[in-house]
Length: 170
Image (cartoon, rainbow, N blue to C red):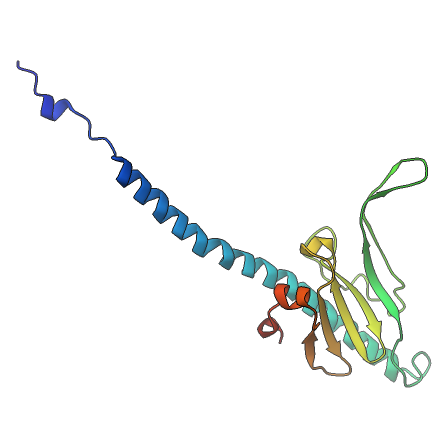
């Protein structure tokens, strides 16, 4: 039986075919990764929106309660603030933790998608503010909710404008 080199020879990829496949995969990834990052950022922001609504409702209830609020909103009140891991005087590791003066008694109602919040929440005079912390990716981006019923807003700084699309807000 004669050797038939044509049938026994394996087809190999040429360099151009291999480069074309790599280029197609690269184009697909450049389209998918930004969309996935936008969705992740939008999901993180949805946590802030829900929590701002919870805090705003509680603060309006506080204002309308004659025994507590006496017709005024909370002022300079931190509901929750994230503290990064650190070391004490002896060099012992202090794990990350959350703190805050929960005068509205709503800390347990706030929602988080992670072990820690993505935003730190505080109530100022007629405004509820969420400021992103390290869990969000970058700290300092701001989302506002003006009491008693809106509107929503984002900070005017460059970091906030680069991280949060105002069209994502309700």
